[in-house]
Length: 319
Image (cartoon, rainbow, N blue to C red; front, side, top):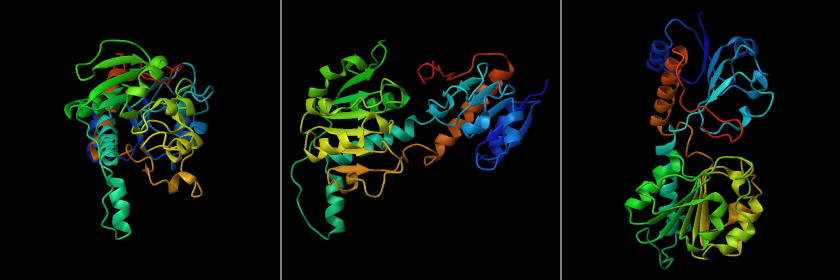
């Protein structure tokens, strides 16, 4: 039986050739999330991309949804997908792009490059004082998935002592010096010179960073968030920086996106904000990786083999 494959990615001819080679004998339709019809979505056996959740309506025809993102929050809401529909994400596609962005933000903060950029825009030749180094610093990586592991490798190569934080135990990678569980995060926050958070959006991670946890951090520490904005509320982040509970922060994600123009976060000298751009397809290689994941999974799906990155609906993580 031929399968109807709906692709909602901005593909070029070479991407289509790769997908169609993996899905030989299937019927392919190409569209965009803002152009696809309800009828096309409801007819599809497989969707590759990001359909609008309200158009899925637990379609009984849909056997498998392959997202182009690592986060799948909208698709694990009850009633969006039918019970039989398999959901896979793009875990692994974003590790280079997001980890390098987080690494760049880390260096920007500890070397005060953001402050010097501000001085440049004011035509000021000004010395902003002492800086710190990753060498011999303690870096806490909260969320040790693909992105967190890639970031850990980079800071370890710079001479940092790396503490990884994850929800479940396991073997400690050779580029991580200590491994602790998320439930024990309070025990290591006072030791951190850098806290880099790359957590997904789950019930356990929402508002993980409270006033009390910022109180535990060194006033010289820096905080980087490239995971989900709701790991820390805007009010808590503002207080931590305004009251100098920590030295500085850089965020690619915020609680409410886009950040409202009247948010007091904009005016903080010790905060760097990028508008959730570390991922997406800004690094072209990311898109190539997504197509490779989708093509590999399509071949496995048609052969009745195990798919890569199957999402556990209870946690929102790939299993």
